[in-house]
Image (cartoon, rainbow, N blue to C red; front, side, top):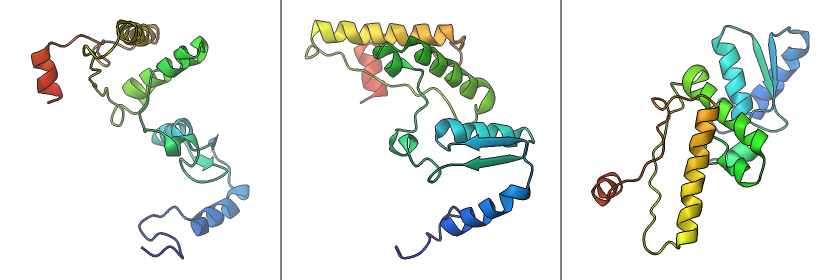
Amino acid sequence: MNTSGPDPRTSLNAARRERELAALPGEVVDVLVVGLGATGAGAALDAASRGLSVAAIDAHDLAFGTSRWSSKLIHGGLRYLASGQVDVAHESAVERDALMRRTAPHLVRALPFVLPLTPLVSPAQAALAHAGMRAGDLLRLAARTPRSVLPRPRRLSAVETLRLAP
């Protein structure tokens, strides 16, 4: 790969960015999005899909900061709840609901995962995992996300587990 110039596989490059920023001051737009992480890019996409003219700017590049390092998963706020940020956890669950049902149902879907609670997991760790799953489902409920969109956590039999995660 040639690292001396812009990557030919992408249209996102410094020359394009400079050209578009130079054209922007005389242009009137409906929406200005500042920050192009997951939320900013989603807001820009949503506005553009509704027929609004959008300018989106970031200090660096698309998904440069936190989004660059993330798993690209839309989570429902459990990590915020774990640190006591209940309001942020609720807001995250509400945003996930909006993405799943209105803004980007074509991009965002429930992703099942298996959390193995084998005999090697201590009772305290298992209780914490169960509490986390219940808390996550309460966030789903508080955000009014229906179970048809985001199923509740459930225990799996050994047979189901082996079928889903051989």
